[in-house]
Each structure stands twice: as C-alpha cells, then as structure tokens.
Length: 384
Image 1: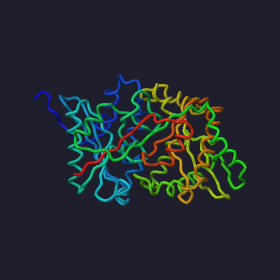
Image 2 (image 1 turned 90 degrees about the vertical axis):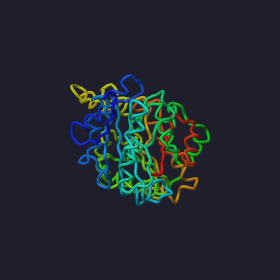
Image 3 (image 1 turned 120 degrees about the vertical axis):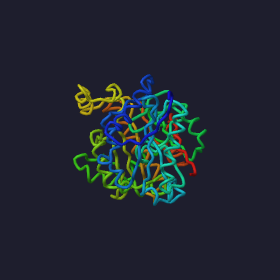
Image 4 (image 1 turned 30 degrees about the vertical axis):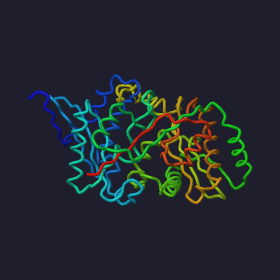
C-alpha cells in the first residue's frame, strides 16, 4: 500500500549507514547545517567504538515509507545516569531518546512512540531528551539560533521539530544556552581591574596545559570537573572508557595555550578548555575525508586559523564557587585564552557554553564580558 510507514530496528551495517546518511538528505539545502564526518557519526552509534556503551544500552530505529528512509531515532538507557539524584535530571526509572530526524510530523510522532514503547518495555517510567547520546555529546533540541552554524560538538535542528515534540506530549525541563562574544575587543574596565588584581596575587598561577603530558593534565581537569559539576543538573560522571574516547577525539585540537589550569597556593582549583571550531574545517568536506579531505584536515590541524573559538567546559572546585575568587580565576583564564586566540589563531569570535539556564554564576560571568545568548537548546521530558 502506498504511503505505508514502517518503523524497524537498526540491525545491520547497512542500517547503520542509512541511519548516518539520513541527515545528509534532510539538510542538504540548509546552509547552517554542518555535515559530520561519517566515520565519527558511525563511531557514535557503534558500541565497540563508543565508551559510553560500557554503562548504557541503546536501540536505533529507522522509519521507512515506500522504500525510502524518512526518519530515525535512538532510545537508550544509561545505567549510570539512573544512579544520579532524580532532582538533578535523570535518576531511577529514567530513559532517554536522541538522534531524532524526520521528514514530517507523522513520522516524527511515530518514531517517538516507538522509542517510548521500547523504553516502557524495559521498565522505564520517564523519558528525557533529546540526548544524543550522552549528556557530554550533543544534548538538547535547538530552539533559538537557526540562522548560523553550530560550533564543534553542538547540534542543529529543523525549526518545526519544537512544535512537533511538544504536540507529542513532551514538556520542557531544562534550557542550555551558548553565548557569543567579539574577542577582538578588550573586556570592560571592571573586568580588567579584577584580572590585574589577580595578577598581583602571588597565590594565583594561571598556567597552560602541557600536551606532552596529556594523561596527567587530563586527570587534573577531570578531578576538578567531577567536583565542580557534581551538583549540576544532568551531571553524569565520565567513565574511563569515555575519557579514553574523548581523549582520542579531542587530542588533535588540543593546543597548550588554549587550555588553562588555575592553581591557588600550588593546588589546581579551576580549568578552562577552549577548542578551535573544527566545524569550520569539516563543513566543506561534506562528511567524507576522501579523496583529499584527510589531507586538508591534517594541514588545518597543524596550525588552525579560525574565526571562532568555543569554550565547551569550565569549572571551579565547589569550595570556591560562591567566592569572589571563583569569578576572578574565571576572568583571568578567559582573558589569557582570548589573547592567545586572537594573536596565534586569528580568531575574532568566541562561544561560551553550553550553560544551564539556572547557572547564575556562569551566566553572570558571560554577561559581564559583554557576551550575548546566540543559541538556546531545550531538553524535554514525558512520563511513560
């Protein structure tokens, strides 16, 4: 029968390829979509290549109509997320969905219903999403900021998805924001005075990381991260398999002067990670490193020249978070990285985030340096 919609689980290598290929068809005329490298996209959904699967299970689904793939979704259960306090977003009985794409609302709704049924069969009582696939990857549905491309490790979506998901019975639970700023401009006088005061304080050292000691530096940052973010909404500790995978992916775009660790009395207490926007390099490649894409990317990675720098992670140990010292360390790290970004990489724009909508401390820091919200991502929930 014509127009018959079939939803089936992803079971084969060919299915996984079709799953990855679908967005290339849906967004082919969207100038603000960044085609991911297909090898990376396949790695995300392949258990043997993604350390997140060491504590999670997932089922991918494809929607097919008249022999054509017209939608996709993932349903997943993160057992580590289920051990977290429910008031922090996940908790017992919570499952997730993600990687959602569809050609129309009927397909979108049917895919959501399929994911809900799969989760319900496994005892899940509440679903939250989109989370693709870990909170540390691409969480949230883009609801503001469709008019410019996302930076590295951030997502894009069709504007109509927001109405479709809300009509399917999902309600907003959390917003994640990114902030845009012109990094060629010096910061306001009050921020400069705070930085200068910190520079006169012998207790404070803001140092670059040493990429030759990658594992040691990563361990320092991870220790601060787990302490600083422990009470945040959506926090799930990174496991060693995930850390290993993240290290492999990010090491090529780690540069010493773009990642800083703040020490107080010789003890690491804060960090800031900044990445050149890899999306600027991979967008022209159309998802493939062949035939010459790999050479272009390797050349770019030697000494990237970019318009945008992204700050995906920043943290200050919990004991300092309510103190003036926390903001002083943050402003110092931001300023030193701002200078390096402009001088060494030709960058003119910075993007900070994502930042939780209720993280008043980080939002205040972003606003004090004259940055503005440029994208908003929304996470939804629904009782099953």
